[in-house]
Length: 233
Image 1 (tube, one colour):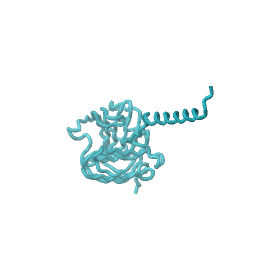
Image 2: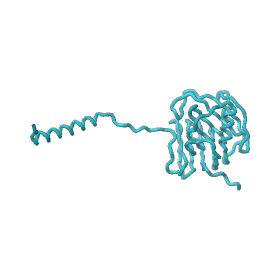
Image 3: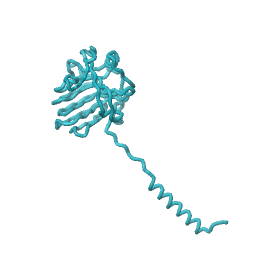
């Protein structure tokens, strides 16, 4: 039996109303905010990363192409900032610029691998504290490697329940620490990775890798250009 036009219109209105109510009560997708490395779409093929523990007072300026600058103060908190590539891995890394910390800070080629989860540093310069040098660091020296015009010390230590690219986790840190500090030059990361492995330190699949400025309870300034070696003059 055909329904009167008024009935059809009433049913249509009820369907629209019910559909609207259902849509209103269904859970809506939530925007997830991350305080970790993000791609730098405005700077050609470079990858930009800025992490702050929430207490460090720091200004990170993301410049064009491989340029970045950091200004930090307050002598509290921890941050890591810089530019590089995602994924990282074996390459000749050119960089130049200035690094002027007051207190504990590092200038390094910094990155992560997964499976296994590893945080690594190829340290080019540092502030008042040499990494892995004090008993509280609880670090173990695994050897040395001579590369890029200097000897680097190979160290490792374990981080327990600390922030990582996979959330809070327990993982090893690998360190290759230059014995004569410099700011600017070429770092052949493959030689350092091979030195880690030769020392019994297993690496996994490369995640991002940056030329990083890190500050810990300190203050200072850093201005770095990734991809540009210092002038011979």
